[in-house]
Amino acid sequence: MYNTANVFKHTKEDVYKLISEYDIYKSYLGFNPIVGKVYKSPFRQDLNPSFGIFRGRKNNLMFKDLGTGESGDAIKFAKLTEGMHTSETIEYLFKQYSNIKVVKTTSIPEIKSGERNIHTSKITWNAEGISFWQKFGITLKTLNYFKVTQIKKYWVNGIVKGYSSTTNPMFDYEIYDKNKIYRPFYKEKRFYTNCTADYIQGWEQLDYSKDTVIITKSLKDVMYLYQLGYTAIAPNGEGHKIPEKALKILKKNFKYVIVFYDMDKAGITGTRRLLKENPTFGFIFTSQKKAKDITDYHFKYGLEKTIKLISKKINYAKQNHFKH
Image (tube, rainbow, N blue to C red; front, top):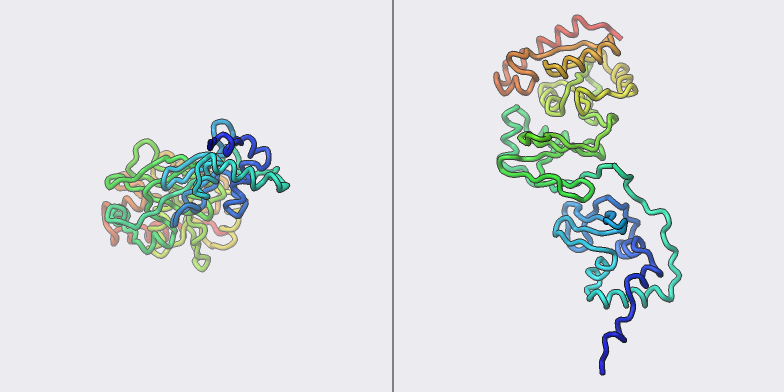
């Protein structure tokens, strides 16, 4: 009589004695995957990377396809790749590696504990996304230049953290190899980022042919100033200190460095701190009664009045500016 017990006699543990779970992933993927990082799915055509290997509750290595929701351990990964049943896959792997001496990977490349690996699902710009930026005078061409994209959702270390909707669009700022998620209508937390103080918004797009650089408080303001013909940067917040090495580069390459933070408590405090440490810097504000920042001023008063305001203030700052 046919007895499946005689055919399928090995267990997952038997397989793991021959080859580690990490090396199973490695052999099928064809490269050394970094645990916690997201790659293109090996199961389907994947325009946006959506597959990753992560630590499970028992510290084992689990995979997850963020696009389909499929997940499991290394044996299941092999099962899906081979198109077999679980028991067949175990026997296949045991037979394949029982006569091969596998050098197990001892040092597994892995994103450090506490590090945020942000992955996004980009979408084509829609009416809601474009409309949000248009009211501040920022064009799609500028958004593309500063590597701002509209997204459907985002993950942090493989876990979905937010979804967009028609009334709550989401955007991703790509800052070198890091990300900053912007949810303008989300009351709890508008920004989420894995950027450190060394990742300065707008730094990649700095125009060193200008004589003036403006330090402002947001990428939104950086982009708006860029459209007016100015070059600008922004830390990840007015409370973030710009690294000294970055300030030295600005002083060396620009005749004028002007601080342009919000006309509120955080902005005033940030301005005072920067001027105290860099007394040659100039500074300007918008009128708090009219608008706390330059994009809000544009929203209320339009392009022509905003151009006149910023030109007048920057010229005044230059006239009262201490030279380096």
